[in-house]
Image (tube, rainbow, N blue to C red; front, side, top):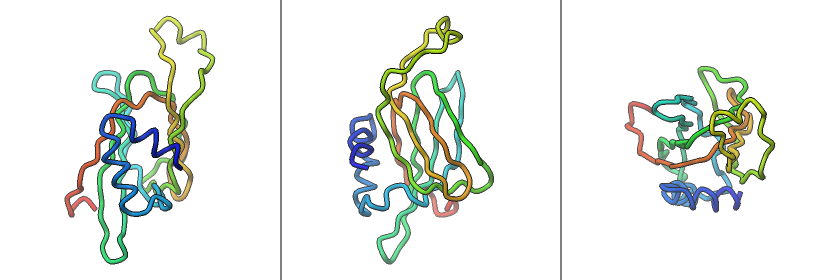
Length: 144
């Protein structure tokens, strides 16, 4: 989990996410957060959006966390449905991987990060990517 925090804090906008997680004790991490969307879009860019809910003992707080990817994305997701609560999320650095020959002609990039989402209820899996930016925004009460 410390590797996840270190990686996140080094990405543009990631310090806000690290601060959010640490404010509630990172031992809870991303557990019980929910995947709202995984968008693969070659024109406007690909994103993973989570609803992160934390409790301080008395009150719930919610934020929208957006991971914006730069370039190519390899996604291996199972179980995406109307409810996508994850048991946790880890971000790891990827070692250099072999490139499939079909990707050589498209200006392939080496992917630096892996987002691994643990199963709970709904979506889980891995996303190999380059995380270009992380945004953390408060959620209006009517979206919670």
